[in-house]
Image (cartoon, rainbow, N blue to C red):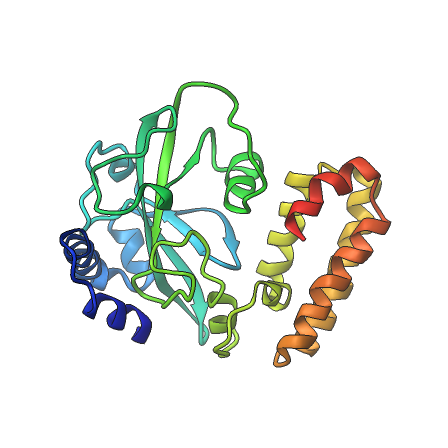
Length: 258
C-alpha cells in the first residue's frame, strides 16, 4: 500500500481532498470484507472469469441498482488468490446510466469510467475490459463502472481499470507486466483463451489450434516467470504463433490485443 498512501498524503486541491475522503470511506467500509466468505455473507456473489489484471468480480445486485453509490458500500468487490488465499485487491462502483454520460455522484475524473451493456459475458465484459473497441448493441441503459485499487497498489494509478501488478503479486513478484498473465495458472490461460474467442471470433478448427498455442506458450512463460525480458519475448512469440493459425480477418480483430 506504499504507493496509495504516498499518493493520498500529497493530495492538496479540493477535488483531491474529496477523492482522499472517498478512498478512506471505501477502505473503512470493506475492511471486514477482505475474505470472500465475508462478502458472501454480506450478499455478494462471484460473476465472470478471474481476470489476470483485475481478479474475479463479486457483485451485490441491490447495490448496483442504487442511483447514488455509497463509497463505503461498493457494489463490486475484486478478489485474487495471493499467497494461497483469496484476497480483496480492489473495488468497483457501477451506476446505471443512459447513453455515455458518466455519473457525477463520485469524486473521480470522467475519464476513469467505462461502460458495459448487456450481460456479463464474453461479448461485453471481456471485450470492453480488454480495450478491444467493444461496440455497444445500441441505445439504452448501460452500466458506468469505475475501478478503485484500494487494497493493492496499481502503478498505472488508483483508478486505472486494470492493475498489471496483480499477476506479479499472485506469484510473489514485484514488477508489473501484462505478459505475466501468461504465467498466471489456469485462470490466466482460460482468460486469454476466452478473450481471443470473444475478440477474434475464430472457428472451431482455429479454436483447437489456438488452445494448443496458448498452452505451449504458457508453459514457456511459467518456466521463465522471474525474467521480465524473457516474459516479453514469450508474449511476442505467442502472438506470432496465433497469427499463423487463424484466418486474416480473425487476426485483424485480434491484433489489438497484441
